[in-house]
Length: 58
Image 1 (cartoon, rainbow, N blue to C red):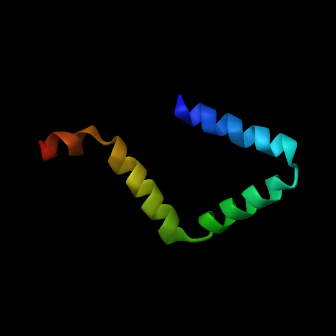
Image 2 (cartoon, rainbow, N blue to C red; image 1 turned 180 degrees about the horizontal axis):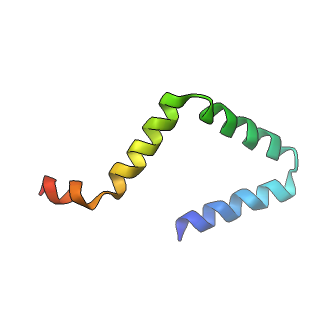
């Protein structure tokens, strides 16, 4: 639910300030240009969603 609220807020800001789209695209391009950062983010996301890891810790 929180994800949709944040997405809605971002879309609302983009509608109010069209120049903010360039800033968002620049930030996304900077993140995607660094493979180490992208791999870390994907690994962190996969680790947080993994139920097998949680069972192993208990």
